[in-house]
Image (cartoon, rainbow, N blue to C red; front, top):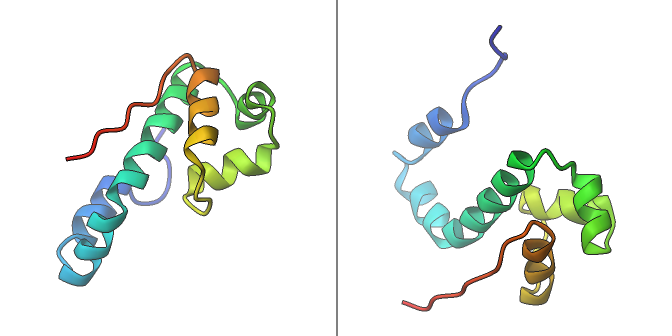
Length: 94
């Protein structure tokens, strides 16, 4: 059984052909990368947003906003989320 709708990577590929979109996406890429890693770690461990929120000591709405990209978290908050998933945050300046 397949799900209705377009796949993210297909939509992204189409949108990346627009230079203005591509420039904005590249500016936000580090944020998107962190969000993707958090979602992947959470879902691979079969943890709900609510369970992760309990582990972090926050509300589910904060985890939801983090994963949707509408919340700009502090480094301390990201560290708490990472530890709650058995991970650690590494920051590299290039």
